[in-house]
Length: 140
Image 1 (spheres, rainbow, N blue to C red):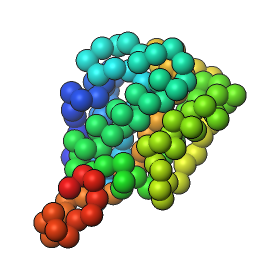
Image 2: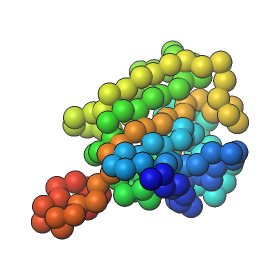
Image 3: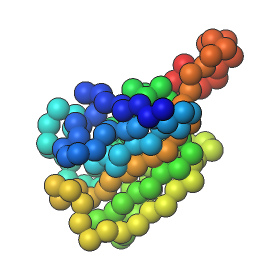
C-alpha cells in the first residue's frame, strides 16, 4: 500500500510530486534542495549551507514517514558543479558519521531554483513494534 508523506518541517512540493512515499517498510524521498522550510529561500549561497539544509530537509521528511537518517540505505546527490564534491562531502559526513548508506553523486546541467545541490534518499521504516526497549535507533 502506498502512503503519501507530507510535512511542513521541509519545503513543500512545488509540483505534482510528493515529499516522500512509503511503501511497506521502505521510504522514498523526493530530492531535497537547501531551501528553508516555509520559504523559497536557500539557507545560503554556498555548497556547505545548501548541503546542510538539504540533509535537514531529508531528515524531516524521513521522520514524518516514521524513519530517520540511521535507516537510510541509499542516497543520490545531484551537484550543480562536481568541483564542489569535496566540500559537499564534508557536510554530508556529519550527517552519516557511522555506517553510511550507499551513495551516487552526479553533476547535472541545472537544479531547480538555481540550487547547488539536491539530495534524495531511500530508507527503511522504523516502527519499533517491540517498544522503545527493543529499538536502538534515534527515531524511536
